Length: 162
Image 1 (cartoon, rainbow, N blue to C red):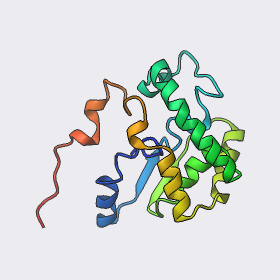
Image 2 (cartoon, rainbow, N blue to C red):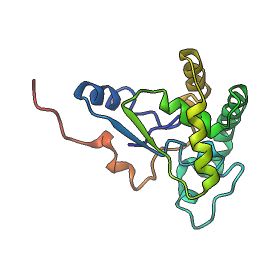
Image 3 (tube, helix red, strand yellow):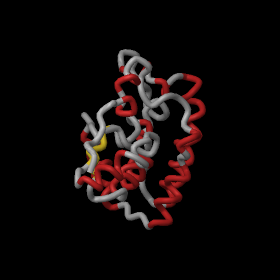
Image 4 (cartoon, one colour):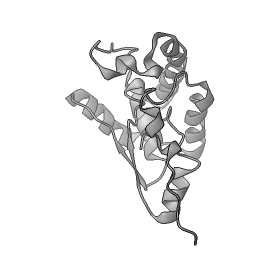
């Protein structure tokens, strides 16, 4: 499931349920579709990229989200790491039952991702990182409009009674 600093909708329902059932969570897009790696901010999005049509990367929403990136960048400096390392480290500190799968095609990004393992965060640090990217301040929908109806939020499957 998608899980990152800017996609935390599974924290209150899915993660506790998975923990109760002893199921691990595989988090895709742990860098917020590369937002915390600087996509569209320090590195442009190619026109043919699907991200060019993502709601959070639209011109209006991106302008608002840049403020969040700036805050994460400032906090990353405090921890002597990059924004992407801070975002990955935050995710890695969410529990041993959450596995991150950051995708990359560039060796420098791979090495940068590995560097997140060296970023150690206390409980206070984790709270500060979470507070730096308030969920209600993220501009734009998490999913592409046409795919939103396929979200887990609309599933009708229920657990059998205990």
